[in-house]
Length: 212
Image (cartoon, rainbow, N blue to C red; front, side, top):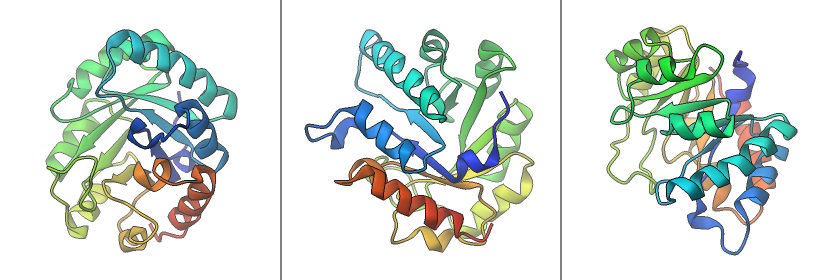
């Protein structure tokens, strides 16, 4: 499928740690209605059956609301659920293997930390990149924040769109202005908020205000 750059302005990455009695389906619907163009289903703790069952609920919801559905790490879950694509890290399935498994009609996103990784991912058939960590993050405590210079070097080195990820909040997103980003990927800035729809609207507006 063709990935529209505008869909990347606000890229939501799920985390059930902040459900607090709410349903993930409800939160996903809220962030899409608030402006998220992509939803990545990220589940590190669920077993295979539970992950697939959840994907089979979230993927049709995304499609019905006009958002792109991405599965974190698991090509098999992406295929079985009919998701639009998969996102892999440097320690996960190689981008080339993910592309071979998914074929040309689904999306492949890759996490990168420097220009060499970005160029390799692009050559392997990635449709977009996630560069980070942009800031210190509770989601990945071990991830070291990148300098703005590294982020700019990555966006300038590749032809495919790049989103920043890692610790991005309404308070610090403006620091990414001028980095050449297509958008931002966020977790707690959406899913940890009491009103996920309002949080998404605010983050989308702030992302749209970034100067490249």
